[in-house]
Amino acid sequence: MATGTKAPETKEFAVIQTGGKQYIVSEGDTLKIEKIIGDHKVGDSITFSDVLLVDDGSNTTIGTPTIPGAKVSAEIQKIAKAKKVVVIKYKAKSNYFKKRGHRQPYFEVKITKLS
Image (cartoon, one colour):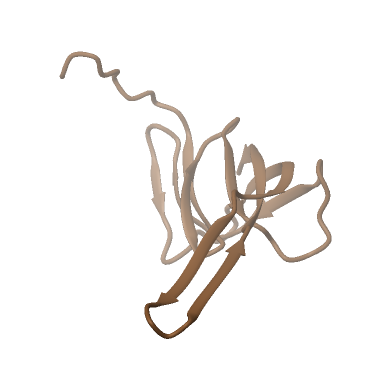
């Protein structure tokens, strides 16, 4: 083992899919995900049913592609927008200049339960 590294903990974790991305989560984790369509407020509970993998430290279950009956529950902590991304299109000598900005909405969620 290299110096300065810790041995991995035997903690239960899962791999979920939401917003076209995959996340490794365990209880108590906080992460930013793509905004989910619907009427959601801070404090609401969300359930992710697209669970791809579950590991409890001794047993690993891999889905094909998802695990039937497996769910991950989370609570919305924050609804916000990310920092602005500025896109500039420019062509020299042709009087063409376009400047656009975009702020991507996201949810910050806290994982409450793996089941």
